Length: 575
Length: 53
Ligand code: HEM
Ligand SMILES: [Cu+2]
Image (tube, rainbow over all chains, first blue to last red; front, side, top):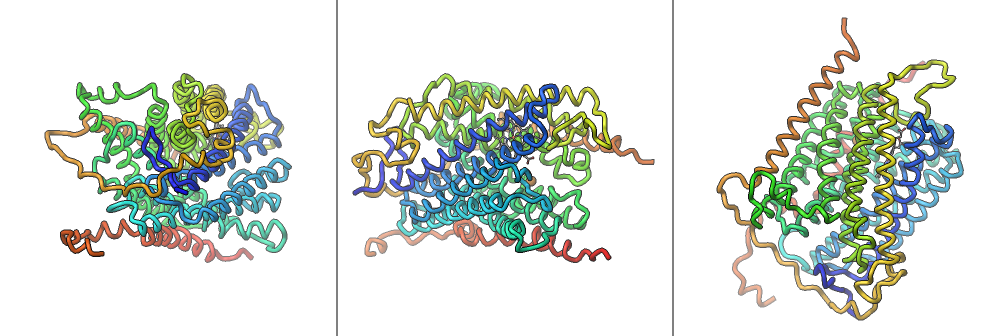
């Protein structure tokens, strides 16, 4: 029996077992997102002081589960699907060790369920960071550990598939850029998970009583090797997907493969060191350590992100211009397929990630001005720009692309899919901007009551702070509506979407069963040939519009950075 | 393989590209860098804080 099918619409080859694994991982991710989204409503409606929906204990419980389901389960399940797609489909290879991949998936599901149960039982409201000496129930940690082991197996299946593809000579030349980006994500993931094991295994043993003390500062340092690096898996993954999407939608070719690869290499070298920005106010470590890791090293990683931020839209601009959209600086952008959620989702993710996430990230990573906003709600606002829009919206855009190709269903309610990236981005952007403002005024993160009712030491926030959180709350509710639209479209497509292949039934969608045997009629896909070298015509600037956008980013950054230094001097007057 | 002899002589792959083509070398670098500069260095500093009496 043949092993592969070819998608008649996209030309992608799917290995039978890889296909099933991609589907189940994506479905598990979407289920986690559903849970996280419902909980998000509880979180934001409580922070919004006029609504103040949940009582304190429930708020912390819900916030713990929101963070873990969104940032760990949704994102990592989906990333495993992306790794299998990159190594198997993009390289036209069979998947290495599908049995192991299934075992990994099973561990991840068991771990995710176990952890959620622990949080729901109520004795594990320790936030996703689970800082010691706060103690959660043992199965809280055990769930996370099992999930991580499962994900680690997924990483090795990815590496194994790279080896297999090379041995089988399924492709010619070097790894394609998108696969190289996925490899970057995998490498960071392996460091991340190893760090997680180093800290969570002892913490688990402590929770069951075998170890009597875990040093709080040690915990923080090693935990952030996990906590920060895991965000860099997301960055590497969503940047790779940006290259993929511009390639598919526009036939865009990276402006320079060399430069883009070099940028990924910078990620491999430096991205994880920036973990130190979480430890900037901790007394136990030296300034040398803080400054080396957050400035010298971090700026090289930021440079890499700026390279990607320039080359991805740049490649799109070059491709659009070659199709004749050459008028002015921005015709290429105006004439982009704004009604296609794959495009609009990707593009909003890129812009919000770069402009809001990137700029605030550099501000927060600077030791001095970090003090203004450390542990305020500015921090969640920042990372909702990076992960809740940058990564999540990119994954949503990719899902719209994959529903017909991988699941062989047409999109359900395409008009809703068309609107979804707009609603989600608008809501989230409002929430993010206003919570950034509130954080600058000192509003704490992870804090149930801005009024400090009955507190021994109280504090009066200015009225503007309340107003900002309230407007942020409205934005957040709109964001949840946008998230719900995504879920309606995706779940609806698997339930009711027109079957593009008669055997694409419910079990094929939700449980990952293969399609009818007759669909798998390719013994071995033809070898992936090397792309022709890109021709460079050097008649002036290739991508002037992108260049202007990059300058705009730079100006915003410089102005905002300067404002923060100025603000610092007034927060802490000297003399 | 016999047909290989008909091919033009194998292309020379630049050093840098050979490095990028080696996933396990990259994996090593990607794990070693943060382990040394972030984790070990950081943990050493915390471990050498004197214990309060
Ligand atoms: C759909 C709309 C969403 C809304 C309205 C929302 C709202 C919020 C708010 C207001 C907080 C901060 C609460 C506080 O510190 O007091 C928060 C925390 C958090 N959110 Fe979201 N969020 C959404 C989606 C997401 C997504 C998609 C992700 C990740 C992919 C995410 C990840 C997190 C994480 C990791 C935390 C931190 C939890 C902690 O402090 O331990 N959120 N969310
Ligand atoms: Cu970080």
